[in-house]
Amino acid sequence: IKNIAVLTSGGDSPGMNAGIRAVIRSGIYHGMNMFGIRRGYDGMVQGDIIAMDAKSVANIIQRGGTILKTARSDEFRTVEGRKQAYENLKKHDIDALVVIGGDGTFTGASKFIEEFDIPIIGMPGTIDNDLNGTDFTIGYDTAINTVVDAVDKIRDTAESHDRLFVVEVMGRDSGLIALRSGISTGAEAVLIPELEVDYDAIMKRLDKTRKNKSSRIIIVAEGDKEGGLVVAEKIKANFPAYDVRVSILGHIQRGGSPTCMDRVLASRLGVAAVEGLLEGRKGEMAGLICGNVQFTPFNKAIKHIDKINTNLTRIVEILSL
Ligand code: F6P
Image (cartoon, rainbow, N blue to C red; front, side, top):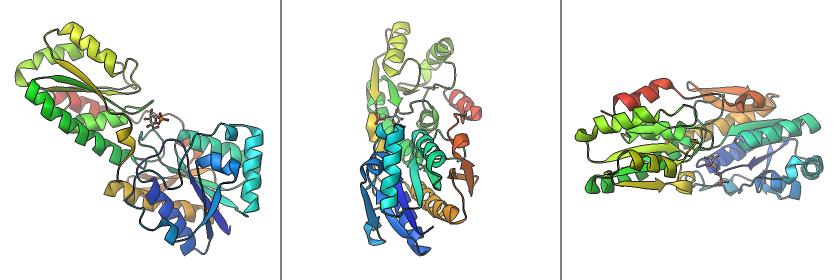
């Protein structure tokens, strides 16, 4: 391997830039020529490939988003699109790739390896934390801290007005953002797609704990069957006297300067990804499990496993008294 390219794909996440920097600089450290592919697989199909050096990743470790930009590519889903992408890589003599993204990114990478036998290593970049083979994905820690900051602010106004707020957070198929942010903001209940929602129990709890608090927060994951607006309607129907408001946090969760944890995670995995390629690995995601770098095949990393720790769901209930 002599020439390595890096791309970011799918939804962006804070820490992707720290990951790009780590890949580029560790590649240079090991004597490689380094490239960046802009706009993910779309840029690979279009041939939007640039040479990168140590300077091109200076002053980005603290920046949210991705300097390489990202996209969800329809063309790369076609055989012709992938062939075109491979030809573009060959024009630059690129013989290995690091892809930073989530399940869609790794599914695309697996297909590409099958067809063209090119070594690819993945790095987990998504705020949802919904990948197997790593305790945390790059961007998750920043996103939950953004949620905590936002909910703390909502709590101030909720407390002043004696209101109940239903706050909807991101997580298309996963309640991991909801669960941790719920615990850390003292939420009354957390509704997530992985677990059946027991509305009766929630309503009973709200009633029972009414005398202990004047403000209430209920966190609902975007992937919940009903969503924040419907949950709020159900609460109003049960408790007409409650002053209920809904806040959908949306894309603020995807932006902002990455936390120290995300910067370190991205830096470690970027170095591991390049060194993994140099050791002859391919078709695997570099992740961090219990503090150690581990490689997991793409097909296992993207398999939706339930990372919900039921000890955490119990904590929400116990502490909501
Ligand atoms: O996968 C990350 C994520 O932020 C999900 O939580 C959310 O459902 C989705 O991306 C939103 O995607 P888009 O920005 O394309 O609407």
